[in-house]
Structure formats: C-alpha cells, structure tokens
Image 1: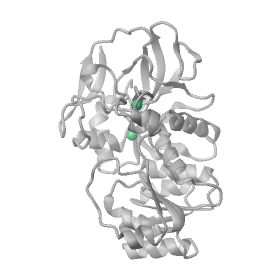
Image 2: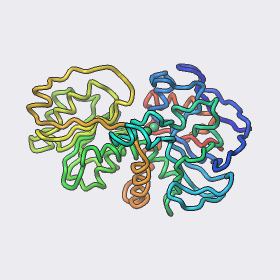
Image 3: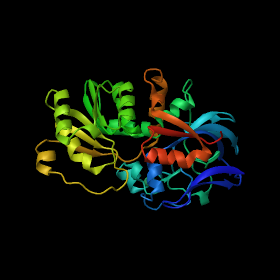
Amino acid sequence: MVRAAVIVAPNGPVEIRQFPAPQLEAGAVLLRTLYTEVCGTDVHLLHGQLDQTPYPLIPGHINVGTIEAASGPVTDALGQALSEGDLVTFLDVHETCNNCWHCLVARASTRCPKRRVYGITYGADEGLLGGWSEKIYLKPGVKIVRLPEGLTPETFIAGGCALPTAFHGLQRGDVGLGDTVVVQGSGPVGLMAVALTKLAGALRIVLVGAPQMRLEVGCRLGADALINFQDTTAAQRRDQVLQLTDGHGADVTIEATGVPGTLPEGMHFTRDGGVYVILGQYTDAGGVTINPHLDINRKHLEVRGCWGIDFSHFYKSIQVLARYRDCLPWEDVISRYYSLDEAAQALDDVAQQRVVKAVLRPND
Ligand SMILES: [Zn+2]
Ligand SMILES: [Zn+2]
C-alpha cells in the first residue's frame, strides 16, 4: 500500500489515505517522492476556488524523487534513457495536445483545453497523480527531467513551481540588462521573480510585499530596496517607488500578489511606455477599477497576462537554477520541512502565511 495526503472535498479535511501499489502500464514510471511542495494553489484547492477540481484529490504538482520502477525502457523528455535510482522531476502539465486551435494557431499551448495537471486536475480516483504521496505514478508521455549534475533536490524544490512561473513572467516582461524592475508580492513567485531578475542583469529591483520575514528573504535573493506593504499607504509606496526610479517608475513591474486591488498601484509603479505583467491572478478573486485613460492609454503602458508554464519554462529554469545554484541562497525560501502526517499543518501554515515555503517529505 501507498500512503498519500488527500484533500477530501472543498473546505474538507486533509486525510492520510492508503492506496494500492499501482500496476505499471507500458512506458509508465513509479517515482519514490523525495520532496513535494505546498503551494498557494493548494490553498485554493482546499478552499474550492478552482473550477472543476476532481475531489478527493492528492495535491502536489511540482515534485522530485527517484525512479523506483519502470515498465519497459523509458527516457526523459529529451530522449535520454532513464534507469532505477535516477533523481528526476517532471512537468506537472500532461497531455498538452499540440493538435488544437490553441496549440497550433494561437500558439498558446498553456491554454490548451486538453491539458491535465498532476496534483490539480487529476483526482485521487484516477491514481497516484499528485506529489503528497509516498509514490507518484508517471503516466506514459509525462515529461521527465533528470536533475542536472550538482543540483540537489533541496535546491530544486526551493525553486518549486514558483521558479518556472516567474521565469515565464520575466519572459513576458522582456526583463533584461539594465532594467529597473518592481516586483509586487513576496510569496514564492515574487521571490523567484526577484532572483531571476537579478540573474537577468537588472539595474535595480524593488520588492513590495509583506510580512518582513518574506521581504528579508527577498533581500538575500537580490532585491535592492524593500517596501513593506503593511507599514505604508498606497501614496507612500508610490512615492517611494518613484524616488527609487529617478522619478520615472519601473521599466517592468511584475505582479505576483493574487490580490486584484494591487493592480492599479502596480500600473502606477511602472514608467510611461513600460510593461506590466500580471502573473499572480491565478484564481478569480474579483474585479478592480482602473482608469483606462490615466493608467493605460496616456501612459502608453503594455499590460500582459501570463498563464501557466510550458516545458521550455520548466526545463530552462531548472538549467538556470543548476548553473547559478551557488550565486544565491535559494533554499532560504524554505521555512520548514514537514512529514506526510503533517500535511494539514503545512497547508494551514501556508494559508496563514506563517511560513515562506513549506516542503513535504512524504517518505519520512
Ligand atoms: Zn504551484
Ligand atoms: Zn492543444
């Protein structure tokens, strides 16, 4: 039997359940889970805030582990042979079809209606398809990535799902050498956006967030200036950002708050002709009033949405993490490790922002 933590129903309890050890179909892989993370998305799943979630559900979309068994010869996503004991991760998004209007015409594969996501859109009734489990069933076709030489599973999970999400956000913002960048939000996505912006050669990075514990991690990951959201008014924050950016505002502002009310403020942080990337509005938290003349048109502002990740964001961000693993204290985002039995506690700690990031060790 395999033990897994399950969200039973919206707002329901998190329970430990036993599942039979799966039979592997041809091309499938069984992963022994080393680490899985507790992400803001899991809090949304607990609260029933995502559409069409198949409860009961084993959460855990970004995971790392070792190959325990495989049915027949299997390879990683790029065709290299895999064997038992290999340290790997995998793209949580599965079954992007590359054969529909979204994939082929719009070239927006992260909007492909066929995509399924481990730990989010697969239910526990369909198998061990989430990481809050001693073992994870990797279906044939899941895009497996071997951890590059020297990248520890701890550093990998520190990046977690926030790293490729932020990577995609930086790409959408065309963040580059010499840019001044404001990051709104100091959760894992905001913190990874700070770190990647630093590596991208930005001139100045201003992190706006709270609480102080998160801002301090942001400082260690490369933020040049910190603005505590809880100690300031909107007018004070705007003045501080203008002061820090020679009166012009940021070239690029990246929103990673999940709070709609922060959007007009983020637009004000951005310079005329700059780019505003909306990365954190993963669930429908309601609307917000903007002034299209002052906030967008007259500012000549570009506002860009950013949905999900594809394989390139996942793969490249892992390579970047491995290359620059010693340049930044990535693991500082991990506040605490939890056993599987502590999954409910870990989820509550994330929901209440008692931790920056909670990591589960399902086999401890
Ligand atoms: Zn996530
Ligand atoms: Zn498609």
